[in-house]
Image (cartoon, rainbow, N blue to C red; front, side, top):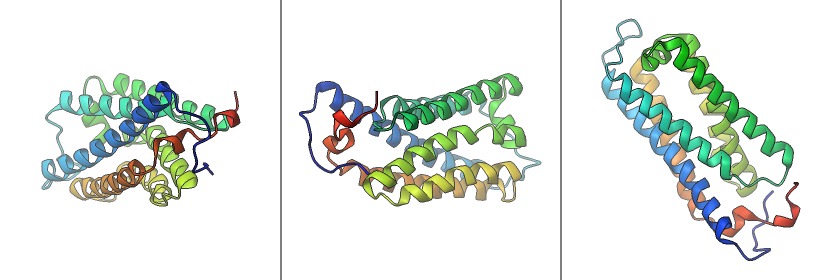
Length: 206
């Protein structure tokens, strides 16, 4: 549990790292929300058989921004325990490797591959796990309990996309729901003083 007090004066890097960390979470939230809205309105009358991703470059740009935003948060997260820092970095590196696999297998059509191929959807699981880990960390440290919900919903969304039990538009609506929860999560997170994210620097395991 993070301590809610100021232990040492904050350095410039302390402040910058927290700002980048929170900005990464916010950007991820907005991307998920926007992506869900796009799916709802773009594929409202589509089935998984008739679905067609027309803007593959836009989809690829969306994925790059999402991976980058999560990576920024991973690079600037503050965790006392060294094993947890290693774990989240491993999760993120796994997600990057999975993304490279997506690019290789999709042959220039990442949107079509992810939306229609179960393997493509499943390769998003490490990224969902990374973002879920961040949300769970905040839930544990600062009682942002919706973070526990996000840690479950994010991988569950990937599972829904994998099995395709919902229509494309309903799958997008589910992502919108997750995005709204994440935006609320960010709103609560941003009200927490920056110093609380740093905590006691003497307790950090090197």
